[in-house]
Structures are given as C-alpha cells and as structure tokens.
Image 1: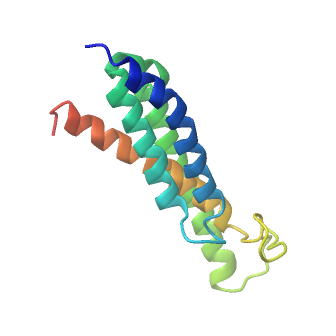
Image 2 (image 1 turned 135 degrees about the vertical axis):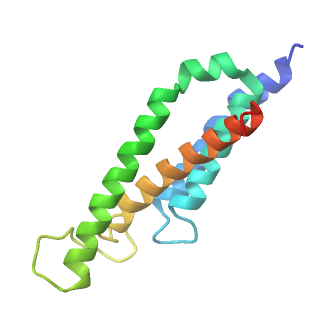
Length: 139
C-alpha cells in the first residue's frame, strides 16, 4: 500500500507533537502537565511514526539499544537526583542544593525541572516499547 498522504501529513505533524510534548515537560512545574504528560505526548508521536513508516525505518531511527540506554540512564539519574533531593530537603541538612530562582521562571523549581525531564524520558520509552510489544504480538 502507498500511504503518501499519510506520510506527508505525519512529516508535518510529528515535529509539532514532539515540540508540544517538550513544552509540557519544560513548563510542567509552572502549569498543568509535567514529565508524565509530556512523555505520553512524545511517546504517542513515536507510536504515530511507527504506524506510518513501519518497523524497519523506525528501528533505524530509534534502535532498541538506544531506547533501553535512555531508559536506564533516566531511571538511574532519577534515583540519584531524587535520593539526593530527599536527603537535602527532607531532613533540612545544609548540603549543596540547586538554586530555586525567581518564582514563575522555567528554572525556578530547584530539582523539579531535571526530574520532569527524566520522568518524561522514562515515560516516552516505556509507552513506545509497550506499544511495540503489543503491536508485534509478543505480549
């Protein structure tokens, strides 16, 4: 089957969907949204790409090793950062912390911004990998 119209439309739409997902992640601590919602949006764009362009072309762009590496690094960094955040903020010790900045600015949440980015990466990879497992009939 020739899906020329679908490929042209997706070539235009997918970057906008991904930019919106990044926007939701970046401004998640200032407005509704965050890492989970933004990661879901970006994961949906990867699923859309997979449906339109097929298995082989998608594997060239998003290999299994790359996705698993991204997932592992995001989870490890999240654990380290959240643990450190808990230790420095939970018991009010005087260890170095990220500056809180000016309220209302993007970099005003201390550890919230990097944590949102790591959650977004984790959710993106998880949603995409779950879709591929169900789509290929392995689950």
